[in-house]
Length: 193
Image (tube, rainbow, N blue to C red; front, side, top):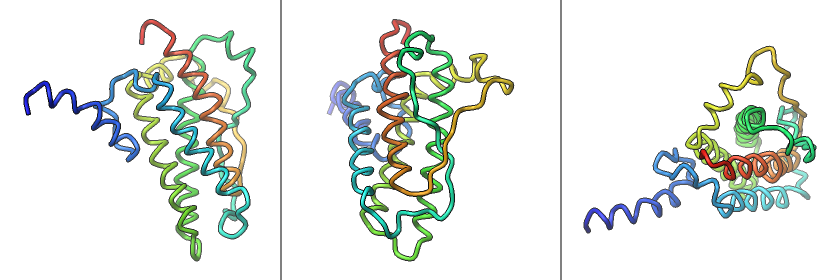
């Protein structure tokens, strides 16, 4: 296979590695701008939320886990430039990743976690890693740290507490469908990306 054949395989390889949570260094910077990419993660989050809705045994954490507040005032969101949103989305994604890892640890320490629940949590952890890598490739982390809103004196990220797997997946799903989707739509429309 020639050099052209190898280059043609690179995007396909990235698509295969992305769900594994491996760094998306090989991913084109605008991969997150392909709506199918984010929609896939949203679909997985909704499936996980639906799978845990009627769960009683093994779904309670026994402690509160802090997650980002997913409420969005759409009217206000559209008025503000992307910088403050970069801070909110980056910090929210980081907090959500920590929360999912904590949920994963608590689920692993339970007596016998249902296999399907463990699969949903593992897939969510992997998905959050991939989304973080995709946003990092777009320069969101750099943009978030360079805005005045990232200063220590700025208002803290609004948070809520969850105590069940269902609530954690609801927040995950809402965050992806709300703030993350709004933000990626905003930056993908900008000409400098």
